[in-house]
Length: 334
Ligand code: HPA
Ligand code: ZN
Image (cartoon, rainbow, N blue to C red; front, side, top):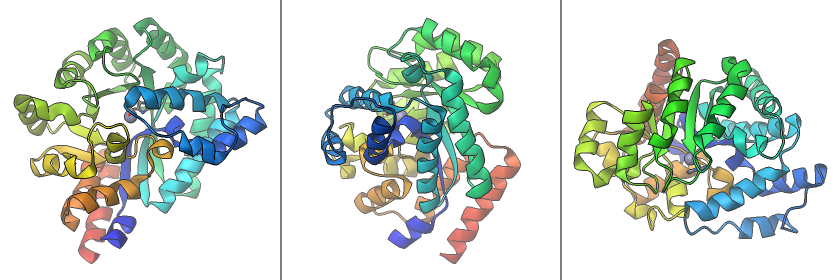
């Protein structure tokens, strides 16, 4: 099954580009930009990646992002992730970036987006990987800051497909961001939001009702509300689930407790994603293997995660058909 998973075409819909910053590159950028970090080696950085919950991760994740200064840094970060995509047979990826993490420390919005976008353009040409960009608002900050960020994005709308909502979930419900999401939708940006990772099932309702989201990021706590699960099935609402992330952040104690395969078998539109692979110990293939090891599944079921992701992606219908054919061809010959 390992070979089958390695070669299976994959589509990633939940990846924070800042969360793909590997300790080696963090160290290199700290030296290149003369930024002090509280670690004296790559091993010391890795050793610090022990988390109790989402917040304990976020504290280290935002600190790590401090080494990103110049456009080339954002290019190098994104390019390194895309090379890993190639290795894992990821054919399409939809990437979150957190502008406020950078603009709040004086880095220009243009610096961030131009570096990321240039790498995505090169990846289409050189690696045959297609992509979309999702601008994510930090929910621990206020809505006015999100609105100011949307304003900065206006000259770059050709590069951005969607808006998202991430960071500290509990205490920062989706309804707090209803106005900025309405404005984003009016600009033809597609809405998605993290909900039901650590927060309650009600936050999933709020994301659907107040933000009009097209996908729920994480969403695994939906199981606390049977009626909501039924609604998610009937509306084919995609959930971008991140298995290794959920274990590292103790959303589930161990992979055998994870509900992703159960949700798939109930008919939910679940997908497998890596979230912050440099911090959580694995990219796409690692996540598929971890799920399959803990929950024996058929090749058809594993391929269904990719089919679900293609259907849930923000590419056009023709591209979706092409990718679905690619997966089906792989499956009949596997
Ligand atoms: N949840 C919330 N915010 C985040 C995450 C996550 O999994 N990763 C990066 N920011
Ligand atoms: Zn996430």
